[in-house]
Image 1 (cartoon, rainbow, N blue to C red):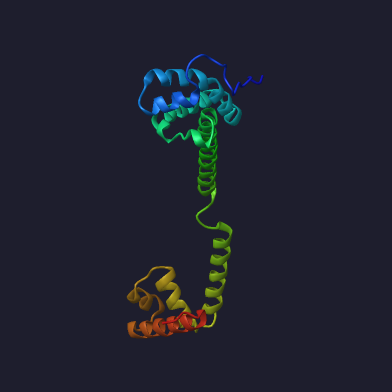
Image 2 (tube, helix red, strand yellow):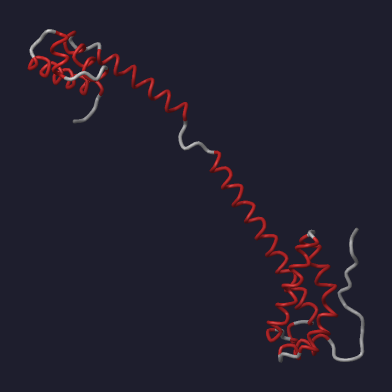
Length: 194
């Protein structure tokens, strides 16, 4: 149900809104009470038409009326009516609240998307690892039998050079030479820069 918004207020005996705002600018609390009575309905109606949420509308209307009290000295009767000035403050404050809520919602959505985005592409990582393994296998096939056995035992089985020499029944120096030569060939085959 829409609420009726009365913008003009009722004509009452005494000072008009412009005169009251001038008095409020001087700190007159009684004048502010009368300003409040004249503008609270229209301010709440305008803010509610922008925000739609009753609780937020009441909060923003209260902020607007506080702003009227604090900034009444900025009101210039030569530039427009008092009601127009107050309702302009109300409209700006309501639009600011909508924009602030939208910006907050946008930030939360971006943060949620970042939380769901994986740090890396698992499929790409698996494909690259598979390709690298295949390239290493291909390069291992280019080594001599003694080089291939030495590299397998030392690097894939984790044996010490001395253990490799004992298992292959060759001198330790020969194993070291074959390993060095085999690793150089692997490096060149894999295209790794020294």
